[in-house]
Image 1: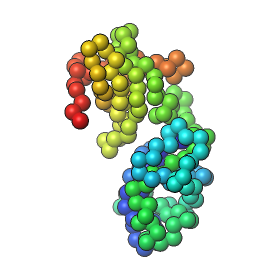
Image 2: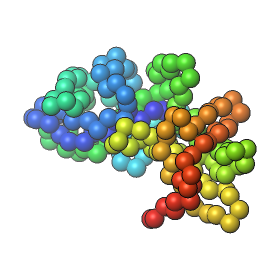
Image 3: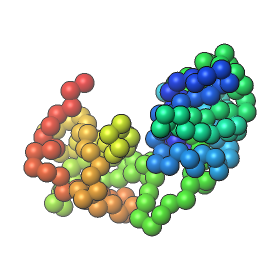
Image 4: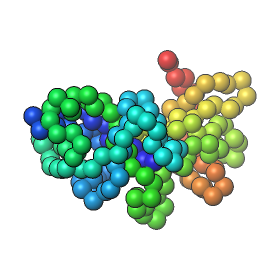
Length: 183
């Protein structure tokens, strides 16, 4: 499944939500069927079906409000009902997505081996969207004497993805892999 957005804030009295979008073109929500709402923290990346308490929803309305996507669902009719779902995530099945040549899903990167100058340095744990309009690749560091995770901004020029072979060749700027994550 693919993460589309988070229900950021209830808008108005009719059960509408302002979205924090993860998808590039939120206006495409109008054409999607079988949308799924899942509670915060429930990750559906690899799910075949949506486990409870996730639920299927149908879009009732889509509009723009102050340059943010605003949606309402047939199953949530007023502000009181909507408040319960604030912070929930909106997902869809992979089968509904149309990828352009050379595009991939974030979840397809999980487990890919990462190489720098032919040397294996890690494996992809996940890709996270950021508010800065790029993804962050989170990599398990497998270099000798290193442990932990490395956050690497997805700058297209740094990455060569070979999905059939589950391999990423990375050409990062000097010192990027030496920055340790502070948790």
